Length: 145
Image 1 (cartoon, one colour):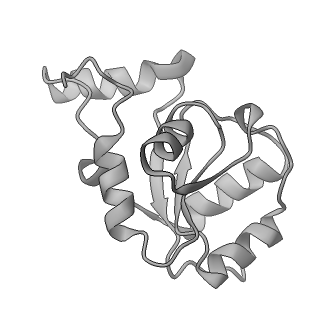
Image 2 (cartoon, rainbow, N blue to C red):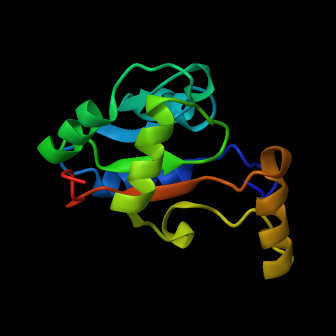
């Protein structure tokens, strides 16, 4: 495995499996492509997605908070390919505010071995200028706000 293999989610999968606990969903993400499908194929674990790059309004923020409160959801991937609108955007915005950002070093391979500047630049230019994905831990998140 080299640095050029950006679709390798082995470190993410290992982290999620080690920390999933009793959560029903190993991960929540706004897109069915990429990370979600890779995790499902490699592990058989349940991943909650909105499909169609996060534009499905399959669940409300209130319903999502109830899943977090009950412990069915713990980790949320924000950013990356999914964009979404409506309730999906509300959920991702809430997850960023209520959750704890997980250090990339715990779940993501370094995408370049050149310099820290090159890594920063590669993140800011991915997906047409959008920043790369970020992982949030919702364990203990305040679901009343």
